[in-house]
Length: 350
Image 1 (cartoon, rainbow, N blue to C red):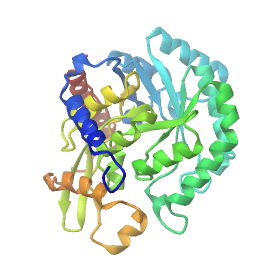
Image 2: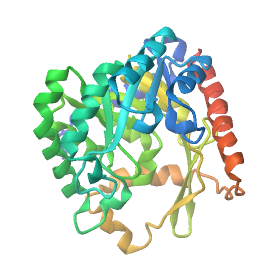
Image 3: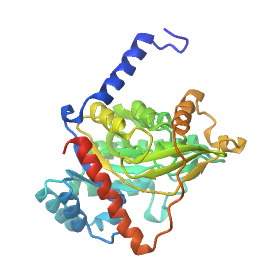
């Protein structure tokens, strides 16, 4: 054993497994279920049937309705029609909602308590045939004082404990996303284990770790035993005088090793949906040279931050993109997604 109580042989075999997994062609990987998260094309103004038809044309087997607005309402008869349409296309539906943390800046109390909102979504999931309800804690704003992320995690766990019996009775699971810079991998792992992995798991997002100054490969390595579904997109990260800049990009245009990430995901999470959530952003600066920045990362181990820093050191600066009109932005969403789908199809041998 080393000083941390880890058997070096076990540690080495794990590293060897991950390296081998990254090198195996995806044609040899079992149960790769390609999907699309509709947030990728969130501004198209379509209804659920149009979304489903569009995704079917791009060979999606899973369509992730990450917000209620995309599915068009939670009335039983409507959901039954959506389910029937999806089944006719050979598509499985996953549905989601936003924050279930009552103290989060993203939580909407006008929709009822967190427990009431989750209860409605569990019923809707059963009607529409979704095996999960995806939800989030919050965003990077919830890492700040006075509550800090630890307090929000406790509040979320309390909600999940309150609703545990209802989730188990439904036969479904709650998939909590590492979302918009809220939780690092070890924090989401703690939430899941404290709430109960028998009914709570992860919606693993590959782009959001960089908004928590975390290497997405570390996020996958930490959370893969708990993964229920995923959001996959590529990212670029590079050094700037203030610290590092992060930009979400089309698949294949980043520098975080997205090909290896997808290969490892297919090996470590067999049978789980591998769904593209393509969001192309302007660069966002993380000013970690400023002491106040670390107020939100009081428990971040140096070795974890070093992995993020290594990615940034290998990056190349990118200029901001020119502004787009509203109509151009709507069209660009489709272009970004479709370019990423073509890249993913080649990578996945679809």
